[in-house]
Image (cartoon, rainbow, N blue to C red; front, top):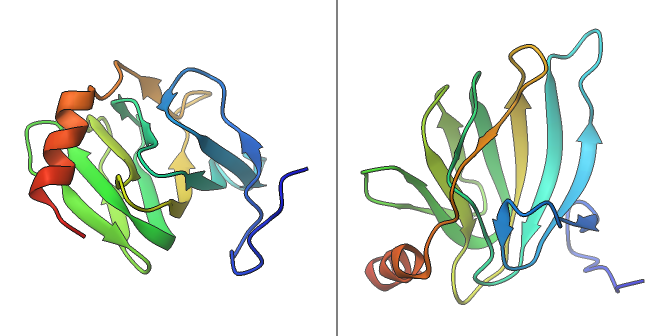
Length: 140
């Protein structure tokens, strides 16, 4: 078992191997959808350079950064830098990606709403060119 960072708010969780991430990312599920909550909450940890694919959420998502540095970018807009304490409210059906910077890990809590049984629509990977441009233009 990998050694956990004792300073982390939540354990790193399980490595994500679903093909929707570039690099090493991990998920610790904190709350699953149930009869009272129409959302899921997870702590996602990204190693340096790790990131999501482009994707959307039919009922939106909220990210709360707990560690490290990284980026959030909506399609066609400049990237926003993320750091501990950043809160991002992502509108429904907004194409975006998020992940760690090239020089830091990133951990965030993701609160993702469901529309029926769907909470994400996964799209193409963020290209290395797109990712490198964000890192070049946003020194952390």
